[in-house]
Image 1 (cartoon, rainbow, N blue to C red):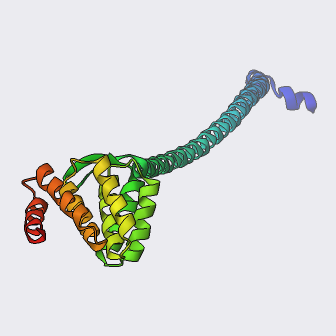
Image 2: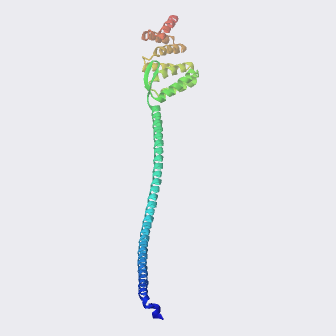
Image 3: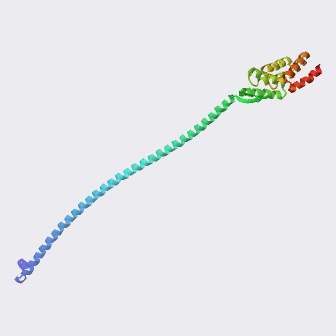
Length: 257
């Protein structure tokens, strides 16, 4: 029955043999297809693994690049901070320098101002021009302010101190003249005459020299020395004939004779 099932009748034998071969070929083709598929799968797996390796490598490179970028960004941020600090330091330095320059300028101006207080200045008194120390000018003007107020006792003290302190000053002849007048007003006649005479001795060409001689004659009259007064006025007229004091002396001489 098996043989017949396989081969059948003689008339069917040629039909079953090709079918068998066809079945065998199909089996072989199925086996071949499985090998090819397995090989393709292996190739695909290998490519996937290679791709994964490449991707991992790119990922690692990307991570490294990202770290490098972060480090670079950190360096940039650090440089920005340093630049900001340097800019702030530069601004502070510029501000400090400006303040130092202003302070130095104020200091220089202050020193110059103090020096000017001690530097001689040109002054003009009673028609005479000369260089005077600031202290001389200050003391003389202060004493004369007292004299102009009519406080002759205080003026006598102030002018006397000026002469003692600044005896060689250009103000000295004028100071002696006004000191003599203050003493005359205080009826200190002898000292008054001595200062008028001292004034004529140190500065005979002074603009107030004629007035000083006339003042001496006035003192002599107060001291009842009429002879001495006439002599002084005669000398005044001879020494300073064009002066107003000389004209006054002529009138008085006419009355005294």
